[in-house]
Image 1: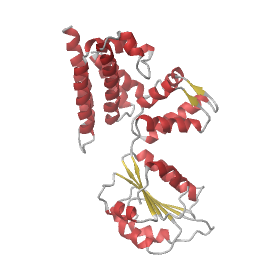
Image 2: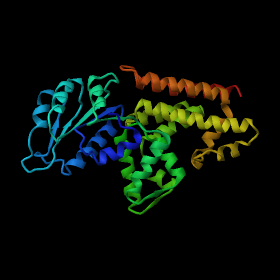
Image 3: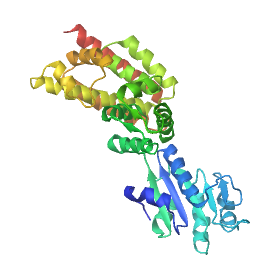
Image 4: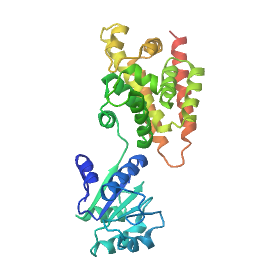
Length: 338
């Protein structure tokens, strides 16, 4: 059966009598995290070879054998398959026809919607299919707040919004940055915007923000340097596109406010989260160059960039570099023609 987003946490925390959990989608970090949660719910010690069997992509021929093996020390067993695919369909179907309390957990990133394995799991009441896709916006902020809350750490709204805007789509990378914040704050701590910037000031996301601000202000050299640093630090091309899109939308909101009669300073102060004080000059320069219409065109081109970067085999790094260069060149032309 399919598991809706509201029920995922409960299912992973209490798998109950489920025979199999299929984790599919685009976020490999989230898939691995959820697989670990489900496995730990059954076998708290994941290094126990009597209760946990981990199989690779060639697991089809061993799946039934592992499912019906007995734990020498007692307790329910877990068979954890990594990088699963349709080859598991037949052995899993045969296993479900026999009695067993073993929980099968299958990581299947990139599994097609018409997959035979997915169809089997979704059709069985004793199985759970869970989609794992990158979180954005409020969902991502909620996950960050919840993770910090586990250490009784509070974070200001502007700091949370700024931090969420820096993160790429990979859950594992996000967890790493959240853990860094938690160590910085300490249990029971409180994080402000300045705290977050100080803590992750060397993160790839800061380089990415540098690239966005420099490009829209017409600073080609600064934009090129920043995007190379961000890519070298592991930022994905899709994260580049999403960060640029967020920046362009913020510029457009401020530009529309100015067109309706607000001063530039008031328009910038009205944004949430507010523009960081060290960025106000660059942001203001961009506002003086770009019209709301041109910003919308740039946003549409950036959306096209994200789509292109998702195509298999696309030269995504080159596409990112070219897009940044085009934005900077456009801003430079606008400045020259003022």
